[in-house]
Image (tube, rainbow, N blue to C red; front, top):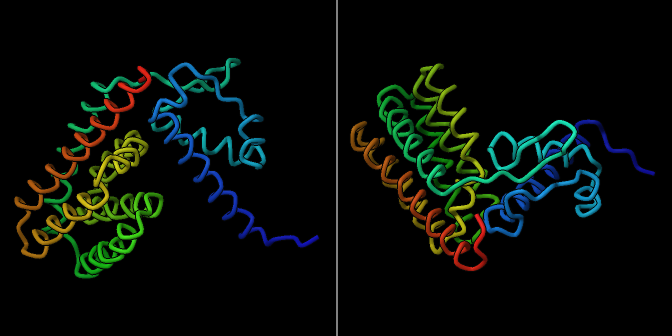
Length: 231
């Protein structure tokens, strides 16, 4: 039997936990796993042909996002999140993202700007392929790159903390209509403002980008509510 190096085993486990998390995120968002559903580690491990370790990590990440609740002696339960609560979180995130990109426009180094531009260029192929998983990963890296370019560690910590709560929903909104294409176009508008050195314009465009994402998520939720009455 071939034994994989420890590094490859760890990477494989991480990739599997990400895949499990993504599938469960989509199922919770669509209502296929309604609020109150119990998630059993062993049943999920059997379903995904995995050990319990990547399942446990996927559930931990879902807990950070607020999609599930880990209850002592009662296991893991799908949380009830109201659309109103989700929209409030997006509204707050929009202001933080706007502040971050305004600071970043004036403070980022040429190397940081070049990295963001390269990331943005790479996302075109993901959109053309309709690859939501790849775009979701890119999107996290792109926005965190902007946070770090503020060179304000306190702001970075706050932005990442709120983003962790919204990661699942930011992924879900990419399923709505042509949101993938619109998201990239909005990033492009932000990058043009950054290139112009106009932090206020970049902030306005980033705020609009986040609120557009919230609107797309709202439409997605309404669509699935009308289908099965969940959420």
